[in-house]
Length: 363
Image (cartoon, rainbow, N blue to C red; front, top):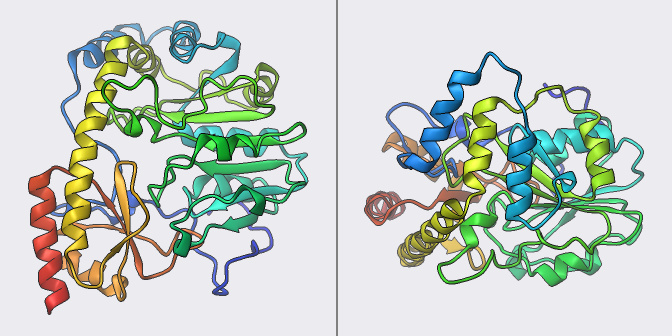
């Protein structure tokens, strides 16, 4: 249990609190095909595996984050003081919740990854929610965020909706006296071959006051067990977060991975992977669109899609009986039992899954 809960957050609409601590890995079990976790599973390339393996010879020494911090900073065109390495993106949310205890009105834009709100609540914050409208494809309306909110959290692209918000809409949320946290854990899934950078990313925006960008290296590179991510933002803000971070929070192998993933070969590989992902995602969306009663939310832009399906809770149980794990949607604020999130996999896996889903729906 995550500490003592505070008063229920407003805007739920259904009178029940979702389980913010539930994640896709809880859906997975031996013998099930995993469509519940958004981590890419593929052999680790040599340019990543070799330095991680070599780092094991240095485990007697305490981790030195300096080289990795410099490498990440160079990738994003920032000074090293504007980078804080973390044990996965999730640690960044805990640091924010602990370091920013003085905020008066924290707001989380939902549906999105639940750990930011869970971390805030565990630290005693009373959180307000802005729920995006499924009828509007969960697109951001910046005017719905309270003007006096001094901490705003939003994902881009957003988990679980797979919506990619316009950078301009996010930028208008930045203002003096406010910390704007943009979770870009899946931003590298939106990159494309021949395109400089990632569409709608704010990683290079050093002009926006209070902006803090959260990044993860665990998704595309299959490093969820290694725990590596980082924060980009104003040096003074990062110093506040670093002050509450445990000593040597990021391991030596994780630092080696961060350095490798900041190299040009990694950036080029990300774009190739994202291009293949886009084709695989389009295939999944097309197959789902042909099924009766299934509605794909919005215009998916990441490594997963969100679907609305009446009776989805029962369908999920039947899928498990047939060997498939999918992510329930009712633990995300703003969704409910008729939503499911599906990870994008290769076309063969998609075809097998949608055939089973079609059989369940016909029955």
